[in-house]
Length: 333
Image (cartoon, rainbow, N blue to C red):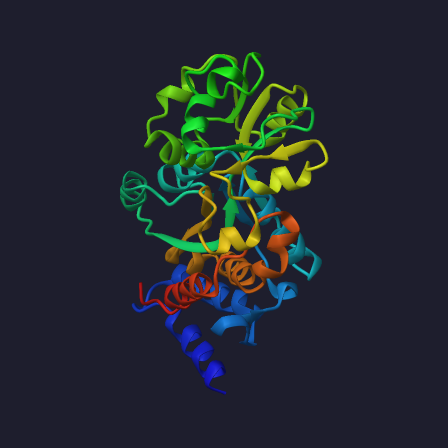
């Protein structure tokens, strides 16, 4: 009964605070009608979503790492009845933030890194206040071909050499062959690129970009194809792309620590990183289908994320996002 009362209050707060003309009234009526998907208490304090009653389009763009997770959640949303269109563009976290905070073309930005202060300022300039929703954790994976029988583990110092100044594998470790290193890495718009540069090169991208035998791509599937084609290739991307291609790739331990669920959860795996969605309260209020999708995502992501190849965010982080959703829809922000 208490949860239903809160939902009723939410509906009231969505009404305009100032009486307006016919256009405002029509917009308000349409918004309230589109909130028919609110069906009582749901997961973690959020209202239950009935996808059969959700209408309107949803536009998302950003991280190639988050892409398979958002794709999975969108598929489930549709399977449970949503008949609208969800666009999910895999263009990299940086490019996704550009579309969300500068062009204002998207409803949701998918990101494998936190938003930067400059990006927040860009969003403010177009009247948006980005809201951060943590949806999972990735174990960034450094991978080689199954044909590579010599590299099993790498320290951060060795990774710095592998992805910059070393010309051959033996330049990094004398026990490794005297063969040229072939490098396949995400493009500079990728949050994965930014994260790796931060962790391995203290945010300096130049060492990677000046390396020999280097191929960059925003499409992680292209990186997979390049790495698995040679015993002397190496690259990195989100764990889901390794998991999908584990039959043809090997993942390196980092500092002797495996990328396992336990090591990601306890923070010992050195390249564990959070995954995010970003939206805005005004978007969620004016486009209730966006609010519905984010609600659905935060409610059921932990039922899908391991099937995609990532690791659940802890419950405390998910609850922060759920509380933020309720604040946004209650008109507090």
